[in-house]
Length: 633
Ligand code: ATP
Ligand code: MG
Image (tube, rainbow, N blue to C red):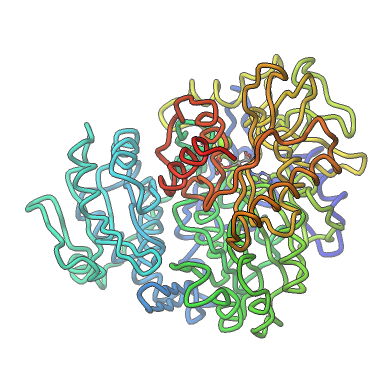
């Protein structure tokens, strides 16, 4: 294992030059029922298997293993400002609940290798059901609660579950979102509906309808199995543990399949080195359990290392914009994890909230999921007076690809860059046309040299072909890429410039929309900006800006802000990047996970079909954009 006092450079080099020795050491951080026979099998590239022949279990490592030393320590705190309820579960209590839930699953004939779709809000039961699946070797597929019935039906047909577990309802901004009618509609539509639906009743839906023989009450069944002890199912390291769909920013979501052993080892390593959280310490991730961050850093990561995980259902601004920080004070949070989108929401509120609470325990704020623009990073860094660390990763990788590692020696950050390659990741920036390594400061496509490290996806569920075509078919060489455009500087820091299809060509100049967004966001009136390329007869493409303002002003103020944005772009990037049009709108279209849907913005700006909108958060945002386009800038 990595030793105290080792530098990032030393450990990184070791992880790349002697991967099997490095990962064999990391594997000791988790419990194995049978130790691995081989660390790596790479006989069928790009498929790879880590810790071959070893058997282990995620639930054992996340729960049972801690009972000896920390049974009475909090494992999970689930706070809801929507219902006003907080649940605090110690490891002993979590163990009990997970055993009861596992017994319920078994009583419904769910076993090893069976899929269970989980359609729940951010509540403790979601975590309990995930762990119960892991315990018995069932494969969970968490679908973000509140997705429309059609999206749920598509995922059901892809996963073909034996069981669906849902809540009666979720809540958002004080409004009840009834889930059960959506489940009913999804099961109508699905070609492969599961025989049973297990409903967690939160008492939010007085009109809850049950289908006889199909729908079962969670509390009632758990009550019947309250004292059950369900032995853990030991699984070969490469057995599937769960499925999780990507955000759908670039098109139809892909069903990422994760393994057991490699994932557990990657979680243990990253909790220590990236997030600097160990046994007994508290981590607060604001993510929903339905996303990759939620799986890794609300559930498996913190629990595997014996930490306390804080789960939050509610808006970042309710009851006021200080809620996150008041929770940090109350629970002594050491590491907080959120997204740039989340911070931009707070940016519309009084920065005094950032200083209102005692944050002496808080050491780090991590942000991931989207480009972190410098103005947002500075605002939160200065407001909190805490280090703010940008992480770059993907649903596919399951843990950070680019980061800084405070658990080793923390390197200085550079605004606009998520930092350096994480341990075990061989990263390259490749010239799109020549397929050669790009020189420092030269733009190219970010790729991972396979074999992918532990923790990353094994394949696309039931679709090895899509795994190969989506990720490994872009270059002559066998290289993994999700097609993000990047540049690496002479110090080895990588800057993400956006997705390759976000690169626009203005009169022969290649511009990253991200670069323009960064400059526009620096305008003091701007809350958030999206820049897209729009077809233009003369120049090929021109940049078009959509922006929301921090304070809604009158027409004159809006026009003034729009002029100011253009002026900044010309000043900082040159006249070639001058926005052809600047639209000021009330909201930008985003995925449910908070990512800007630039491809849909670009499509409707060019009056094309906006494409797959299944993960769009608020359809009104897109409607408003359409109206703005008709009205003109
Ligand atoms: P889909 O793959 O379905 O189109 P998606 O790529 O948005 O959706 P995710 O796995 O949620 O699905 O997001 C990963 C992507 O998010 C990365 O490939 C990158 O484009 C972007 N991203 C994540 N973190 C950062 C970051 N720190 N800086 C810049 N971009 C980031
Ligand atoms: Mg992607």
